[in-house]
Image (tube, rainbow, N blue to C red):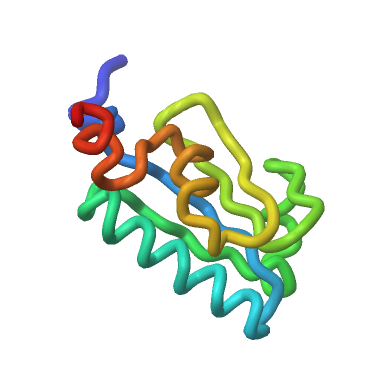
Length: 110
């Protein structure tokens, strides 16, 4: 039996990210703000960032084995990667996402 419904094929250039935070604390707010800024500056609309509050959705932590917050999980493109803790170090976050910092390629060519 076939279905006429098309199965969406993931865009290989699109990032699917989940940011796990604990409540509306200053640390959570900083993590969200940092990730939105990093994504806007480096992924230019090629990302989906889901914010998951572990207090409101504790079962979401089980599948991805989240044990600390904030934790950023890069689901797509594979491989799955986790960045745990402070997300204010832009270069560390970009390395975790397998992205070169903005201007890095330009700087290397000089």
